[in-house]
Image (tube, rainbow, N blue to C red):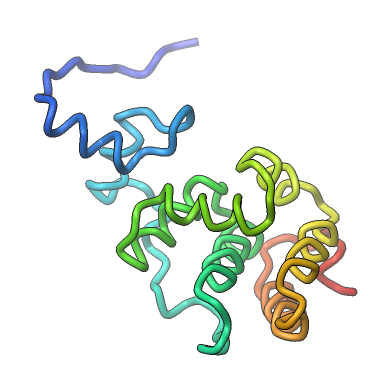
Length: 160
């Protein structure tokens, strides 16, 4: 296997601090953060207007969680890419987005990632509806919109 050509650069502590602030701990490398900053990730092509419409009366935390789910299921993003995209959309740190879905659903990022990668998305949908019971109908409507746009045909739980 041929290893891709890599280069070593020196950066000062200010630059490193910015890279750390924009990295997901234990996931992102400095190179991944720089690729996002430089627009080299192809996933940045999606427009902020490409999201299904959602009521403005829904809490921001739920909106951001649903948008991460949309990016993963309908657009094929990784959870990490989706988290960074939403952070950029709202001009917040990726850690803030991750904190919202982790705290609101009382799960670790890895547990959420497992639910997102599971072809039966009902577990995640049920978690959302239990946590945000007042917005159960809105969650169902959003999942219907995700189903309509989904790149996957094998997802269960989007249909019921």
